[in-house]
Image 1 (cartoon, helix red, strand yellow):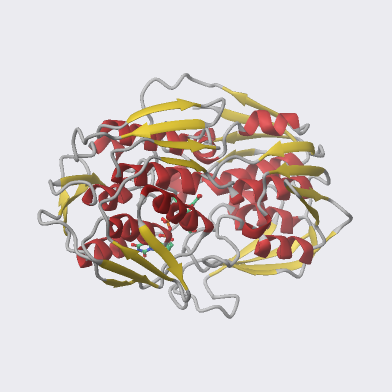
Image 2 (image 1 turned 60 degrees about the vertical axis):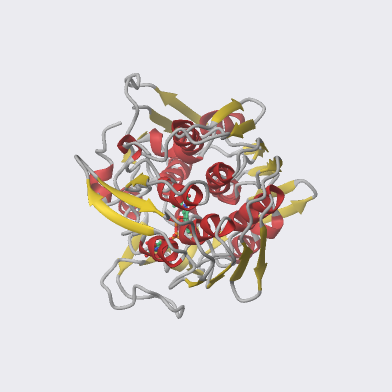
Length: 466
Ligand code: EPU
């Protein structure tokens, strides 16, 4: 399990190219299973979650060739070898459950899907996925297997289009319903759907593949079922989380970084919040430059939300930025109930962050009066000092790297495998910007890592074996 050693107090300066989006590429690979034709992807990020998804696809019969240097990946699933996803993928990430929608579109046979994992930032149940697939005519049953549970899924007579109304615009449930709806007989309408740019990227890919699908007003997606498949070439959209992460790191370290390929249209809300605290940015034709232009002002109020709101995946590095802003700021997390556990380590580094169960904001929040610590007050400016930190999840991991970069002294960060899931070449990219950061291999990884399980608590995660 590798660790990071970071020497703080240096500016980040230079240019970094943002990679393709993790939360698009993994779904696009799953979507390619709907077809027996070749799909070629460009701008593919070289990250752990894509590798896991490639392995999942290969397991069921896909032939994949991936030039990691060039970021080009070709996948073709001429026929399914099996529709049973092995238990070893249980808890690997959020992707296995999406295989249900795609495989239902490809086969009438029984499908077995192990339980899903992903970062332990809330309960992260899959009830909306199951309700949507059931409405389309699938039978879904949860069964305890030898060690972990699994979903047994089938639609022996195929799927039939239907009206689905999601209780919350869940990204994953929308994707699952789309994947299944593409091959259902007749029309499917998904109301209260998620409309994140990564979902639009999925729709663009599926349209190239032959689907008849469009995003209507009021979060409604219409799909006309079809059996058509075409070969597809698709350039994956830029990772707006990675782009924002580098932007915030530039400002926090009082530096200047041009984030090549950062997409302005996907970062409107984020950029407003950067401007609000006095951070500098300049939108260029092929990216966005972020820079420090004087002391940051506190007084910010963030409420995370579904698109086009402030992303829940931006709030962790933003909280670090707020520790360096003069004044009091508030973040109200409305997407996940348990996404502030990481702030405890920041306090140990010198931050002044208080957690609250109350909704500190006016947005309609599912966690109102439910005793989840889902709001924080950050008081700044507080100098940070280096220390030993355990990463609890992917985005908290980047926040810790950022904190270590601005802290006085040296920090040791354990849990590099969390960062590998979503930030490709993080260490060389930061080194090229002047960061004093080293990756140290403590013990070679000999067996495939089973990532975290969704029911583990944050404090247990740091101990998750690799
Ligand atoms: N939810 C349910 N039931 C469901 C599905 C979701 O209650 O059946 C709840 C979740 O518990 C959560 C909320 O709805 O509280 C939102 O979940 P959503 O389904 O939208 O999230 P996801 O699809 O599991 C994706 C990203 C996350 C990102 C969220 C929100 C992937 C692989 N993951 O997760 O990304 O935070 O959407 O935008 O696409 C990350 O990249 O670090 C990450 C966590």
